[in-house]
Image: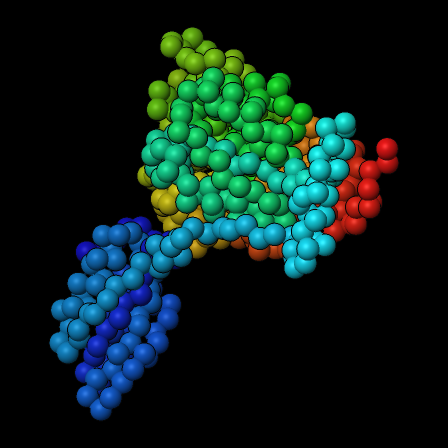
Length: 478
């Protein structure tokens, strides 16, 4: 059962097998896994005697069905007993991925008296007198809420708040790892717009920022806009602005490689939801030549019926020639394709009809809008959202640094100017002397990225730089 999808660490399994101890035993195991289409990443001998060897064979597979196929192939080998199969992704999630650690030791009565009663009362009264002191004297200084209603989780759709929690935990872990930002998942058991706005407004005093996550369009637009009006802390919808920032950064360098100017290119964006809308708006703000937005209903064009306000705005501000055909026709002659939609919408033949030195960003996960192997036959530059392909466009390049900068500057809101500055910082981190068709975006593990983005955000915010490690005054002046 060969799989069309590419093996990934997200479907990594460890298979414990007992195999007859002979010279070819280990080779037969790895050969079998390879012929089944998986990639062996580790093989560890756990135990052995003069008759048998017990080994843990770890491999990347394409999906759950492919993993089962690999296990069955091993079971069919002579002299092989499959004893246990472990899904490494589920093992990583046991008990959750984040926890809380106190920053103070609380080793003595003296420390307890200052951290809690009676000493804490003085700090409470100081904040009551001057509420802005909460930004210095509480976790508000470095903490954000990652808020979701579970209505649009990854590519899984409306799976609800409990099922969304592993994603929100992961997001919180990324905030800490890459930006030094303390983030906490807030999963809401409601998908009512008014209730979400009310709840987030009510919990906001504890946080220095709100990161909205995986909330379906078009509700996400209203929720973000109204929270921005109500709150005095930044509200950032990562599915919109994080994606748009990284896409613009990658496109900036891709255009540098092929020698094209943004103001002269035609871009087709597949997916006019949260991410697609934000990408288009940021491209327009940066001066793109023309954009065609495409969704399930077709190419968004003037005169189209039953459009939401968000789609009508896109139709009124894009698609100069008012194209109304299918996606294949839209990409014909286009310079850039950006997909934030669904898998397998285009073929290599469609990419072949694009303009010379075409750029393809197929970002649907885990399976892109077009097979990247086929796209590379015709496009000059191909990027995906996958970590096992070159040019991974990943929001983690943006949101940790964006929030680091906003928290440091004690910013009250997130702005479009911040988004443009963050995109420039990410693009410039690669270095114009380093970019090429396979390197248009820095690695998510490039330690320079988050500080560069934070610096760019602080410069736009023009706020005070609050060093998280700087000592606080011993007491508030009264």
